Length: 301
Image 1 (cartoon, helix red, strand yellow):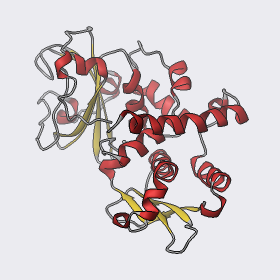
Image 2 (cartoon, one colour; image 1 turned 90 degrees about the horizontal axis):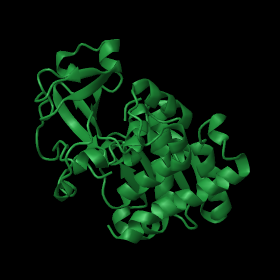
Image 3 (cartoon, rainbow, N blue to C red; image 1 turned 135 degrees about the vertical axis):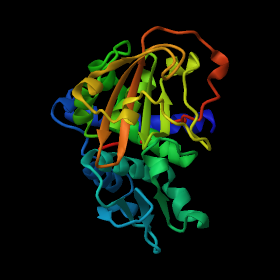
């Protein structure tokens, strides 16, 4: 992906964020999160009145988390769909992702026959931030719009090692899932940390902070099976308040150094979230930066 392609979603989200700050004030998140569905309707009506988004609706779209579709007739009329049964936080990010496709990619979707007048996004693209190309762009747009850094950083210092309660408070502030809030924090934290999402003792995916990645701490999950350590809470399944708050794991359990492991279980999504905090700054291995597939770029409810 070119630098322009990487920056465009952030520029578009930043432009809308600046507009919202001007209208509602920079303290707007003190009163509530972005009403992303209403924003998509109103924004599209203003920038493209002849080709606006008419509906943001729940639909049964098997195999997909969300979709952006348009009419066969011109001028194109648009709709955002999100799949059944999503939590409020996951739904907000899904809508934000599809809104990102509208802002960034609607011309391609309506003119390129390969899209067939719509784009359908599965969980890997939307909820794990592991999509590529335009999926990655829509994901970056949604994260930046729903959780702008200027507010997020003001709530949580880049040097702080938060627990699930702190991150959960931020998830409520922005109206997103806990996983989405953790991933956003991992984008800017200066600490070494890692999120691991697992089920039945195996990692679905993992995301390290930049500092952790530079010190060689990452987990490969793409086209590989990563079995969690036998002493991991997600394996022992002792989901206590103590495990949620953080327990020390000795050198050699997860990595060749001690970690503080925080773990909780989401029965709704049949998965565990494990947050690892590495206590020291650690060694720096710059050559490892491009290695991990612990994905490049959403989610528990």
